[in-house]
Length: 79
Length: 132
Image (cartoon, rainbow over all chains, first blue to last red):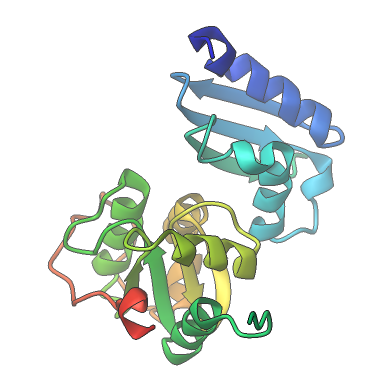
């Protein structure tokens, strides 16, 4: 397995979050292993924080803790 | 013979959650956290003076596996208050800063989140793996 196939970019996470959560816009920073994502999505409105974070975790499934070593999340429903 | 209805690990976790009003599943122990997210969560609870039980998930991989299945939450740490999952490090941090965590823990008079909490000495962790 090449290092390139393993490498995770903040852009990839941003694209996948935005594709996976309707109407989401994400700002993702990270070093290839640890990432920080701030996600705004109208879909979060009325949901508990737990439910909002689960929605984001569900985008990545088993990759969390593996290929994506750590992902910090802040969610907001937006205006 | 296999009996799929018996899952001692799952039952030990459920018992620990039901017996402890505030319980943190973490990597390492409160005195020696093995991960920055666990360390931060411990430090927040300690800065509030909140008594909590702690379970180190590292000694047996089945602890984490069963816990995540039970809670439907993929990451560690996980904080439970009164049997309910409150969240991981990110949610605990947000709730601490907003004062919601103090409320959830019944600690309305706890110090406000003005400074970064410092880790302190803590009690011995529960050892789920030793209960089996």
